[in-house]
Image 1 (tube, helix red, strand yellow):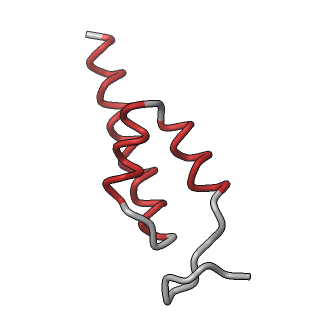
Image 2 (cartoon, one colour):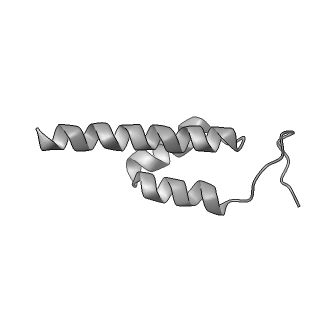
Length: 61
């Protein structure tokens, strides 16, 4: 039963990483997948370390 909670928590946190990436104009499914394959912590650190994009989609200076 505990593994089911762990899987549900991993999916939920990976979803949040994907939504965070989407808010930064990045691909939701890519970052959701990265978080599922590795861990949500690695996905979160990945989107936080990448440079932010402007609303037009170009990198900000």
